[in-house]
Length: 389
Image (cartoon, rainbow, N blue to C red; front, side, top):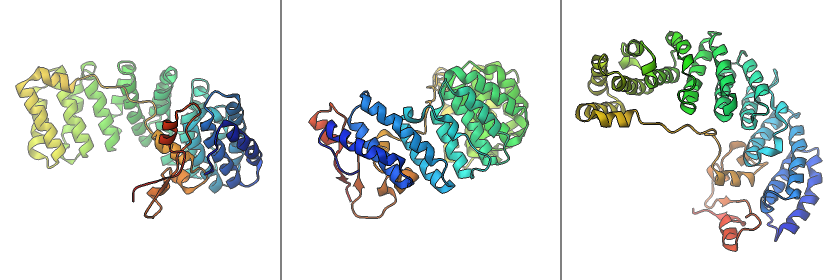
């Protein structure tokens, strides 16, 4: 895998000789063959028939690895996670093999869940949502939380299915299971950030569950929703005031969110919330020992007292929509890890230099694609590059 072919023809010849190894009984041999093929496919560009054929041949051996014992499955899943970030088409038809089985260990379940989200598309979203809703009734709390979050990620990734995802989350909120409700509130906040002014009709249902929220992230998310849509919630001032009673005991995340939400409310409804904003600014600047909270309180106070119009522009500014996939690996790191498939680096999702001691690390990079100029090929690092000590 460290050999670099001179041209496409030599790369194709090597690929043809290595392809039979995909049917080997040893998982390590299979993954090593996958590594070489992934590396050389990069040289040949995206649209050649040869690359398309190789991609089709990579799917069955990877699926077969998932019927091994759990430890081998986990290694295979971690490698698959890298492969589908680079080439999602390879396994796009194989969603069902990543559905969780009742007797899977938790580390397998969580990894499968992550891959399911990466492979989710408009074509299979109904199937995925049905599975995720079922997972949300399991007994394992960590797995249930991750399943609820996954429904939110589906809504953000596949816009056409957002309404169905929101409906599924509302069904889960109606179960009144505390940790399910809290996770649902957190992901609904993200959905609001992705699709502003689209699903406000569900705010009433969320407010009904306000008293059950005891985790900082869920409370902060609910406060953000109330502040963001304060003009549409008649009793927004009462709801936010209820959080002020124990302001000093709240988590810093909740305190910061509460400060911003009340300032937003004041800018939207200045006549009846002046006392409330004075109270929160006083708590933030005089009673708090948290420098972040104090600084934000002073900034808001000075903005409001000197230039309310500027305060409006800053606090009520239009926010950028959140990205669909925020947990993808950086492209250069992904390329390096593809060169380390079937090694510890591909399980940790970290380059070897991050966990292997030594004066000089060895950094492998994918070879340059066909059609790149000589200077680009040199820059792409077709050879092993020593890192500075």
